[in-house]
Image (cartoon, rainbow over all chains, first blue to last red; front, side, top):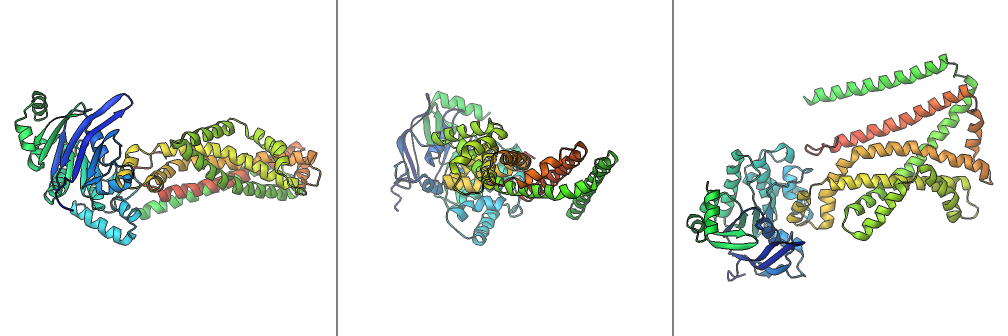
Length: 247
Length: 273
């Protein structure tokens, strides 16, 4: 594998739900180890775009390559794609009947066929890496939002993905828990993980993201270096939006 | 702390058992004081009632697993997006839920039995099986709806997360949807199991029908017990004992169901209890 191709490349993605056109020809590209932040008003298609990239949603048309492999080709199994492209959800979506460590290791045990003892070791290691060594055997209902989201990040990392997608990972959190999740994400970015993050945490975007895409009405309205788009957006609409979320 | 909980649960259990015994003794005393106790009659009827209880248990042992299996598949099909499976099972549910059990059992006897009866088979035994099968399908329709509700109670985010981890549809069903749906379904399933036990009494109609209609000596049990209960005084005793037998069977069963529920209990998933 050479670095001649981007880690993620999406070209001219279209997606409609019935008559509602959510994505109207979106293209983007993320190099290995880079962090792309997507911002945009609600209904702009951010979540749908993320779900197209790991094929939770199939685009109506357009192409997506992950590490040079055309994943929208009909012969590629979506399960294979989702192992390579992990996802962290806004509302955590931890499996409520499983303890923290079993949430993390479900894929290892059921897809990779790793035996329970080894998987548990790996799960404990991952939970330690997100600072939850004392919550290994807790059920999700007994964890705070910040703790649940950190378990979800550990779960996303368990299958050793090439890319992690974050869909508004801190939007459902009480303010006091936001920084612990952003800290874990920042460390992950610094370790060289390729990430696409839908977020309105502008501090995180400025400090950690390499690129930023402003999405509105299912189209990319503006894109560029993260700091540059945040501090000196070229388009009037982007200026308005940035001034609103910067408060 | 847990030691305290366990001993408290034990006291509750003992207290419940004592109350149960007291109620049964009270009923017997009441029967006696009202003149419903007649020793020779009791000696004749008790073995027959226990024979009947054995038939109830046999019917339940057949109906429950069949209805649970069929009901699970029906619930799954009604939850799935496969239109053929959905419409076939919806039709099944509407037919078997909308028809009284007595009608189903009689239909099984008059229509089903001649169709399936092999030559020389014991009609009484066959009547028992086709009748039980009709009751199993009836309960399957109800259990199908219980399972469907259970499946639908699993939030879509759970399914999305399972797919995002890389599980395929079957693994998602087995590892994520089913464990959660089953926990939610347990309490209403316990209700339905109790109904199955009680509704098996409808099979008694076939015993009576057999006395009239079956050519062989088939309804020995029904024929023996029928004349005995004609005396109002003694009949009351029979019905009370039968009620107690049903009560004990169902009490034991719901205790087992409760133990299963407790064993599978997970924080955050006990909303349905």
